[in-house]
Length: 192
Image (cartoon, rainbow, N blue to C red; front, side):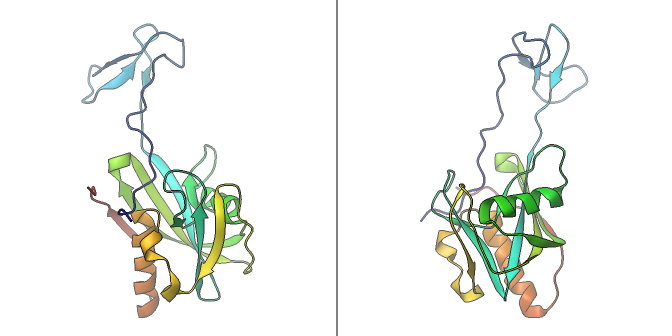
């Protein structure tokens, strides 16, 4: 299987018309800026594009980690931690718990911030929290074909969806072995 990809969203997200006044967009560097932007010559609006935030959890129950089998692209039929794009008007923690509930049907007690991962190749930031599942039941939502708790020696490494998932799981196993968990921040280099 190919190396795990990251959540995919075409970048930049090209707009054709101004969301404020409906005039056709121009792409150029505005005065005082250093990047090409979507501009509206009619109303003056600058339409900035910023990285998307993916939030999720690493849920644990009875010394096992919860993984979801993706039902949707990208990377359908691969295992992932429950995670997805953060919504407006929610905190990172609220988004992580919502995604866990939506993808696995699992309620969690949110733990500490665990990994913050820059995935600049797809204009994303992935944020995972440690979490404790309130019980061992799962009820996968429509974005998951299955949800299951895996013992650490049962993790399907060859069929994980994204590098941010595999690196987060590797950090968890390492931290568990040494008995100390720490928050990590790092960037994933491009994979070709």
